[in-house]
Image 1 (tube, helix red, strand yellow):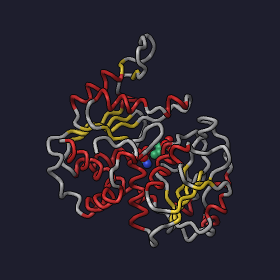
Image 2 (cartoon, protein in one colour):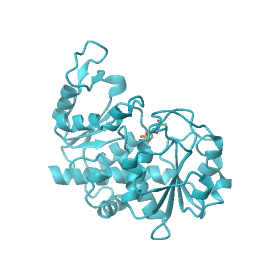
Image 3 (cartoon, protein in one colour):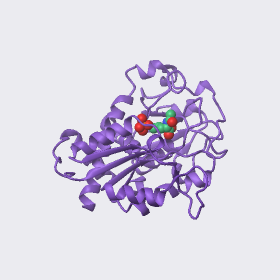
Image 4 (cartoon, protein in one colour):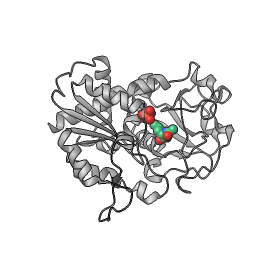
Amino acid sequence: MRNFISVNDVNNISELIQKAFEHKKSPYSNKSLGTNKTLGLIFLNPSLRTRLSTQKAAQNLGMNVIVMNMDKDGWALETQDGIVMNQNTVEHIKEAAAVMGQYCDIIGVRSFPKLIDKEEDYSGDFFKKFVKYSNVPIVSLESSTLHPLQSFADVLTIEETKTKPRPKVVLTWAPHIKALPQAVPNSFAQWMNAYDVEFVITHPKGYELSKEFSGKASIEYNQDAALNGADYVYVKNWSSFEDYGKVLSMDSHWMMTNEKLKLTNNAKVMHCLPVRRGIELADEILDGPNSLVIPEAANRVWAAQAVLSEILKNNF
Ligand code: AN0
Ligand code: CP
């Protein structure tokens, strides 16, 4: 593995899962793998979990970590080619990524979509340019379209809690007051399709995800029907892909509650966090015995540690 930008960068998911569990069991046994190697974490958007878990994972491997909040502390970045930079952008990605590559052995980058131009957001242009100009391995800390470190941690969470070989996993849309990216649900769908589960997606009409990521998942517009017999319910809001970036519904009936949980097979409830209580998920679920949100966040460390280990072993 050189870059980690989507599930397609993983040769063997089962092997990577096992490696993550080895790190979880013995966090410091690869302490010399990253000695004298520097990880740069570049954030163009806020983060709690991704920032702390990836930093901790790198430290467990003996790496040095530099964190930069590009949105607050960096120069405004230009990404378009051949542009005359006479507006607000100060520095081109060509120089910025190349310079970061001089200081860092691996770079993690978070860059959310603007949710204005679908083609631009879904082109993957930003990450492709980072890969090209930095000339070092790149790890996605959430791109415009995907959040693979989150999805890998989600897979680990299901793997360590499942009570049957092929559980039913339901990804359900939930209401939110803001237009959020499709990155988390796209990525979750991509990983579920690559992993052995019965996978159903439920959302109001108009919230269909890109087929590129939802793939072979079955779509059920009736949330109650989708939840029937579910072993896991993965709750997330996203804005429309079709009517790009728009909020089409705020229907509070889509919020996950204990009443809805009764339709399931006593399902475990997951959410990547941050979550809006009382809008996406009821307090009773988050504070109740079925919530997996904290162990799920904890697994972010082992997902990141497995990925960084693979990159360190294969490239240095
Ligand atoms: C972001 C999103 O939905 O992509 C990050 C989630 C990890 N969430 C918010 O902006 C609230
Ligand atoms: N789940 C997740 O990526 O959280 P942060 O946005 O806080 O990093």
